[in-house]
Image (cartoon, rainbow, N blue to C red):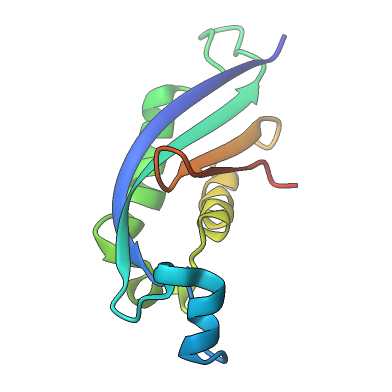
Length: 136
């Protein structure tokens, strides 16, 4: 029996979608208003899902308090109220698209969760725009 547990979290962050080697005109053409040189922000909603067999002693797939603390330490402290392009090392040379943010979050959490458990990260950039990443 495999069960999935989920933990929701939230962070606010600013970013700019652009490629340094492109002109402002090309960035505007590809990324639209998201390439604003003065940045823009989102209220990100995050769902971290862990799938595995429940522990026979505790009945937990994973203690959700531990997952809550991991998300806080690895994601919320690192990203909340930050300019992702300027203040988060992982995005110094990586365009902080929702896709790339989800992969970065997955990579930050993967090593902290039992390897026998599957991990999925779902990141909402807006209520209607979201991405999911399972490490594939």
